[in-house]
Amino acid sequence: RKEHIAFLGLGHMGGPMAVNLVKAGYTVAGFDVVPAALEAAREHGVPTVGTAAEAVAGADVVLTMFPSGQHVLDAYRGAEGQPGLLAAAGPNTMFLDCSTINVDEAREAARLALDAGHRSADAPVSGGVVGAEAGTLTFMVGALPEDFETVRPMLDVMGKRAVLCGEHGAGQSAKICNNLILGVSMIAVSEAFVLGEKLGLTHQALFDVASAASGQCWALTTNCPVPGPVPTSPANRDYQPGFAGALMAKDLKLALNAVQSTGVAARMGPLASEIYDAFAAEGGAGRDFSGIITDIRDKSGK
Ligand code: NAD
Image (cartoon, rainbow, N blue to C red; front, side, top):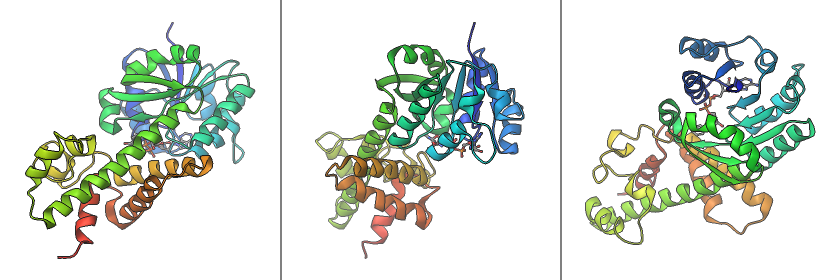
C-alpha cells in the first residue's frame, strides 16, 4: 500500500505539493497552524485535521514544509505546551523535511529524529510555487540511501528530479551552495550590464557575446536581468517573480551562516548576502531577485 503522509505546513509551497500527493493516490492528513491555509488546502482536495498530533497518528511519513529551521526543531521537539511530533509518531516513522533551513539545524533535526527511533531525510526544493503546482520541483536530498529509496516515489510525484546529495544535511548543503553561485552570478551579470550601458554597449550586444563566451551562466541566459534578450525572463514583466528577492536574501543568509560555521575564506557570498538583504529591505522582497540590476543602475548616477 501507499504510505500515509502527515503533511504539515500547507503554505505557498506545501499546499500545492500536498494536492499532488493526494492526486497520486497517497492518503494525506494535512495540518497548518494558520486556519486560512488549512481551509485553502481543503478546498483543493487535501483532507485536513485539527491538530498536528492527529495528522501524525498512524502516519508512515511526516512531511514538513515550514518557513525556517526553528519551526522545524520546535515542531519536532514540542514547544509552547504542544506535544512534539517525534513523540507523537509511531516507531520508525520517516521524518521528511522539505523546508529550506540551516545545515546545522537540518543535522540537529535528523539527530533528534534518529535518537527518537525514527528515520530522517532533508529534501529542500527549488522550482518555486510554479514548480510546486506543476509537480516539477527539484529535490536535493540528504539521507541514508535506503531512506532515499523510501521517499523517492513521493518526491517523484511532487517533482521531476530528486538528487541524493549525501547523508543528513547534504540536501541543505547542496541547495545553499547552488544559491550562493546564483546570488553572486546575478550580481555580476547585473553589474556587467550596467557597466555596458555606461560604456555605450547595447544589451543585445553584450548578451550575444557573453551568452556564447565564458560569461555564460543561468543568471544571463535564462533569468537575464534586462528585458529583451530572453523574452521569458522576469525583467520583461517588470521583475514579477520568478524567484523573489526575500527568498534569495533568506538562502544567502543560510549560506553565510554555513560559511561562518565552517570558516571558509569566502568573500563574495557574504557580500551577496549583504546586497540582497538591502535589496529585500528596500522594496525588492516581492520582486524577482534579478531586479537587483535596477538598484545598481539607480546607485550609479547619471
Ligand atoms: P509559507 O510561509 O507560505 O508556508 C509555510 C507554512 O508553514 C505556513 O502556512 C505556516 O502557517 C506553516 N507552519 C509553520 N509552523 C507550523 C507548524 N508548527 N505546524 C504546522 N504548520 C506550520 O512558506 P513557503 O513559501 O511555502 O515556503 C516553505 C519553505 O520552502 C521555506 O523554507 C522556503 O524557504 C522554501 N522554499 C520556498 C520557495 C518559494 O518559492 N516560496 C521556493 C523554494 C523553497
